[in-house]
Length: 491
Image (cartoon, rainbow, N blue to C red):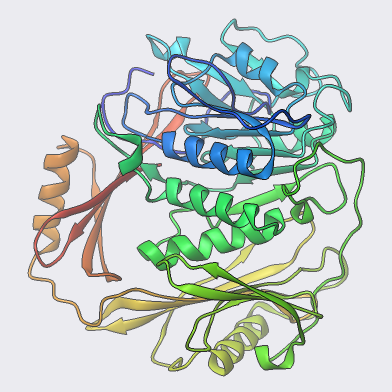
């Protein structure tokens, strides 16, 4: 696309129909990280777009992780045509797209003009032949044949779980036999960089999320657990999930969130539906059956505990729990109202988080969904200092059918105090100077994590080819003490 700003990152509402094929090989700058010959192959694609969205690190890190697990994986960091992406998807066991997207569409490469952008779309039952040379559909794959061996498809872009005029990626992939599909229900942020930025310097925001996902997948956990832990790790590192907490997992097997990438292999016909987690009050009530050590987001050693109740949790050396993952129910009547779920989640946090109390601010109380049929309520609290959110956060996701906690995290930043000599107006001026945007309305939000900071956001709406619009959003983090730019991301 002929974008000039570092705006819209993961994609929002492109009007394509399209295919679910995933990321793959070829374009100008490809990174080939091959492993010993294996029947199971993988392909990943990303790039630094003209507007600055930089997903190359996601490609290289996840490609490396897949090769370590035994896949013969090819990673492309310079874009890929829609047709080559489609062709590479056939027969691949793991495919990943990282970059600009919207409901039902994914931009696999940029053209000289917006209408020449390469697009992989989901497609519908009627979409058997693409009307454009630079657009292909996932629905073009023959059902349960060409991509039936695909174990995992990653659609790491904005709004990829939603319905669009070019179809729905999850519907298209499931109808073609893909075991597990990861997509997202909202904006997601990647680093926004300048031309010439080295790949190795961009391991933050969405790139860090996918780096940590690969780390956990290599340990042999399920896709659902790897996503949950990567989400916790990103919040612990940066104090924001950057939209990556809004993951949706669907697939052709009965438990797509339970799919594992290790050991390497192709997709499978079916797998069993796990039992939903039962309510528990404290982690001491759970019965450990196995434990290993793992590296946390700050490099500190954690203990990864598996329990007889099916809950996995990571524990710090001081005995506190960083995060925990359970299994939500997928059918039955809801037994808890939203208010009752909030009370239950608050009681759980009170029992398991030292220092948690009524002075913490409830910042999120909403319905979320990660797998088809779940009934989950998300509650998120932050500590408060001088009227601003401070450097501790607790998140609880509670099953409204069973009353069980199915996700928990207690993350904390490194700041023990904060000062805000830089004003909101000064932060906005710095962000405008960096982005070159003098006209778009800006929002500036103050909080503290590893330091006091201002987060300035410019939302310019949609941009690009009229048949495939994507979001154009910039987010700049500024140190509230010094005025230094901490990061720039785009969604």
